[in-house]
Image (cartoon, rainbow, N blue to C red; front, side, top):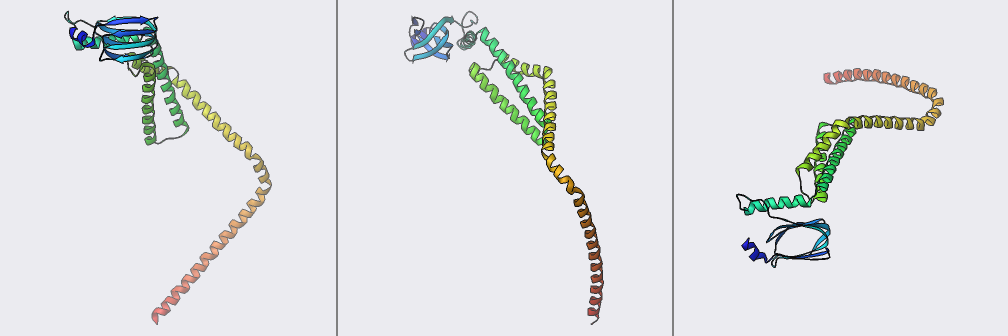
Length: 270
């Protein structure tokens, strides 16, 4: 502790109207966002909570940091003691984890958990849309595997993007539990009904499309009706003449074949 005070200087706090806080004796700024700032000082871990927070000045060589914004609370944490003394590495780890828990309040953790449940349910819904697409259009095994790989790759990037935006990219156990729990809850409750209703809707759409084209081409079919019998007779006449021509061609080929054999034998005798 003496070495830290010597390196960072004396720890001081000077606040102006809860909108500007000048801090001395800062060793390291661990994390910060608009709702909280966590830093290590010569007197322990310091956690600031508020709104629209941002760092106006940062000079770790002199140990000086200025935080601007609406400041709601200032908390200190000394870390965990091991055998009456604080181990430097373990103390830092425990202090960091404790500070993160203070920054992410219980209300925010509940909001994050519900968000992960909704995200898991949304992923299940997207996969059911893929299943319905496969039902309506037959797929080979290769394309099924390729679509599954593309879906899970997209899901990983989607989850990472949501966690990065909502929790600064930090993955917690309750986030994963809510994610897979929401997906499992969806598949146990709504998945069957979603797939069944979607298949019925697609069958109805196909029927309506066929009916539309049938109605669209009905006038043309009615115009074709007076010419159906003459065309059939003409087709039968052409078919009979085709048979006669084929039969005549066969007879002609046989006659020429015999003549060719006879001429060939005469040529060989000469």
